Image 1 (cartoon, rainbow, N blue to C red):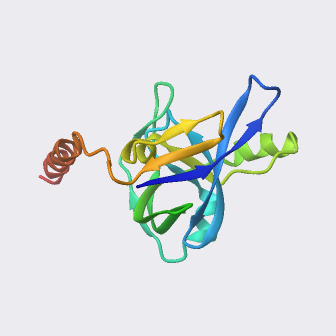
Image 2: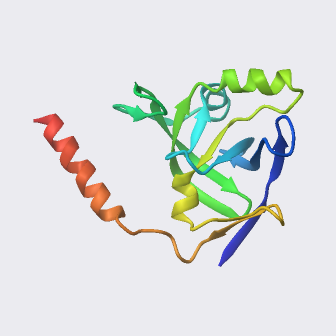
Image 3: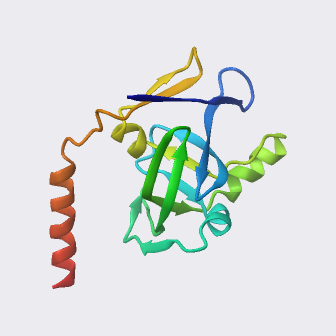
Length: 165
């Protein structure tokens, strides 16, 4: 089964400088997420988190790689119910980031703010296909990408076990 959701094109300056955004629901609250195929993890703005997550589980992350040389210390938050159209995901982990600087730029340009990023983690997991001509993203619910997932989980557990010793 395939779920298709529309996306909007955000023109920052002209037709050569664009982003795409999708509408989502986070614990029943509407959210606007920029699609970022280069982001390893989907992210939420810290301000958005406070609005939608009354009972969320916050998990402290050790360090997250960002662009550049430095590592960013951030938090992971578990969203109980995440919807992208008909795609419904329970208990999904989002990285919390400060996105206020991005929203200030968008506001200056008279554009709507964003609440987070839809990252490569979800796009990869559901073998998403972005159709720019039709302005939609198709998520394949039958063929989730599980290749290497077990190995990655085992490797992460080994690291965690070593730290606890």
